[in-house]
Amino acid sequence: NAGVTQTPKFRVLKTGQSMTLLCAQDMNHEYMYWYRQDPGMGLRLIHYSVGEGTTAKGEVPDGYNVSRLKKQNFLLGLESAAPSQTSVYFCASSSGTGDEKLFFGSGTQLSVL
Amino acid sequence: GENVEQHPSTLSVQEGDSAVIKCTYSDSASNYFPWYKQELGKGPQLIIDIRSNVGEKKDQRIAVTLNKTAKHFSLHITETQPEDSAVYFCAADTGRRALTFGSGTRLQVQP
View (cartoon, each protein chain N blue to C red):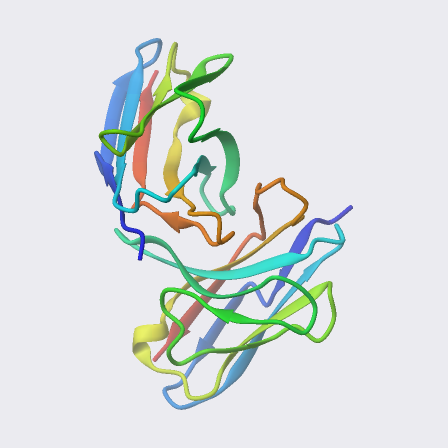
């Protein structure tokens, strides 16, 4: 049972390039989240999904898009990367059945030059 | 929206001592308060949580207290051990199922 898997683990982009971060969970969870972690700022919610085919904006959604075409996958896209998007990105999931415990992936270190 | 402030940002204690981390929240509608522990190179993991209808919860060496009137909650770790060294995050949720996290506390337990 892998839990929450994020790919890639590391990536370096040039300003203006695009990329997609993939999150996959094998726990049949309804809820999925994308957070970014920056020094001294904790974890900030980018976008989240309460079920297949749904998405919602979090605290810092600008510059990012997401899709939840399949229940087990949640994709985070950067259409035109900026240096301000240099961060560690974490995906998380929760069951949605009253248990609010989040299960996190191991993170993606993204650098935008 | 919800705002969660966490103090201190760093905390160093001797092995065996107690550690206390404090958080305040702004939205009186918040009703769920978890604490997450993040070890180096890993994602955060839930260690304890408390709901607004409870004032205190314990799990072995870890306890959380909640003061709804003052809008603050605290994490207490007793008899600290070197493996408790990590970054700890508090969080709050109004029921939207979207947590707002504090800025984190780096705890170092000196052997």
